[in-house]
Length: 399
Image (cartoon, rainbow, N blue to C red):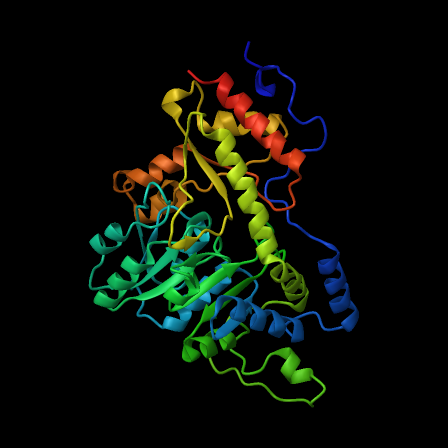
């Protein structure tokens, strides 16, 4: 007899605390670093931010890094640095978080969202080329869940049509393509260090670029367009006046955030190895369930292993995706949805009138995707609980 899930009156898999989805891996090193910053008296952009920028640029093999207070800010700054005509068109993917599209709107530019590849969940290069017009100026790629986009094809398209490439690397800190950091394939790349990301700074982001002109503009615009940040104005070398040289924003990183990021970056590969182990375990355990599994294997990529997403085979189940999500929660397993496709959100439907028929792949993913916990601080018992709960639910509701 099949074991009843908690949602149908059975006993939850976990008797103890709820397993939070994406809980950050905070250790004593981060705590000590943050305490050191608090005791130093210098909390905002300063020496720790500079050190984190240098270390992150070196890790990715890129010349310039600018810390920001979020990846959303980083995307906005990246578009600002291009200084494109108003209403220029920017092509991006329908399968992403809203910040990718919102940054285009903030910039007075027009988002053109296109469908994704059904297997990688990344933007489809064919759809990029189909949607290029004489107003198209740039492409924002999103390396989804840590899987790199098809950058050989996208770089070729960008070169043929004289387009900039901006990369949303929120999921892709460790990701490589053809043995190189994905940042090397873009004019400007942006990163997130939000609480659930592979590097956690609570709230922060980063911009990477090899273009000195872009880097200078982004750094100045990240702090009100001022020529000197507070550390340079009020440091021990003597007072220096600042000048507002261009219109800017309040997007700078704090030394508190940077102090966390430095420690997290030092063990980034340790976290990657643990997440790979967790994902390999899930793949082995779930291979006979009614799901479509994402392909993680390729000879020319290093997957970032940021998310573990599966797509439910709804035709083989008697319940829908949201039922499964709630069933997992009652088993005390945290879950996520990455993502509800952009064109399905009320605001974008109202403003842009995007027709769902244009996005068959992202619509398909959006209705059946869910993400399971893959944080590196999961214990072996936590992993076993996730496996047991997911198997129990999908086995019970299998047709």
